[in-house]
Image 1 (spheres, helix red, strand yellow):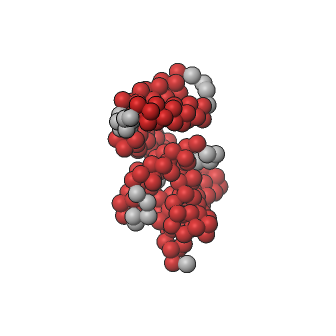
Image 2 (cartoon, rainbow, N blue to C red; image 1 turned 180 degrees about the vertical axis):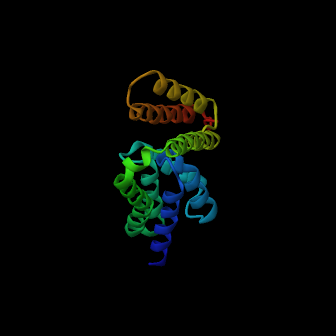
Image 3 (cartoon, rainbow, N blue to C red; image 1 turned 90 degrees about the vertical axis):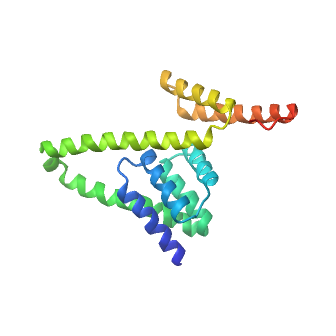
Length: 184
């Protein structure tokens, strides 16, 4: 039971102190779950991010669910998921109650603008971290460039990019096996 409570509070802390949700939470999840708690390895967290991106829902919530499941089974998954969403639910409920009163103040608008910039930096930081750990060879660089340009220049769903990347990675791996290489 103690681990389930630790999961809840670890993810509640992530949910509380990360503005922007989703991708903005990834650096904090990385620090808390891999470096501090050691509940997952770098490779595992990268896999959770990848699968979390492909499945319905917010990537940070999906990642919390995966980590919770690994650490403490179904109860851990539920605890981590509730922990990561709990602060947002409380904060959004409070903001919704008072939104009209807040938005009329220029200081609030300016603060939100500053938060948007900070969130952009956090997302770029998460992308750089994923790049360093996930792009390991020429194939990865080509796939990254393709995925980046495809999502930037088209209106197709990112899920299509993920499916194409999965298929390409599988085929590339098979090609390397037949060739006798290791894909690097």
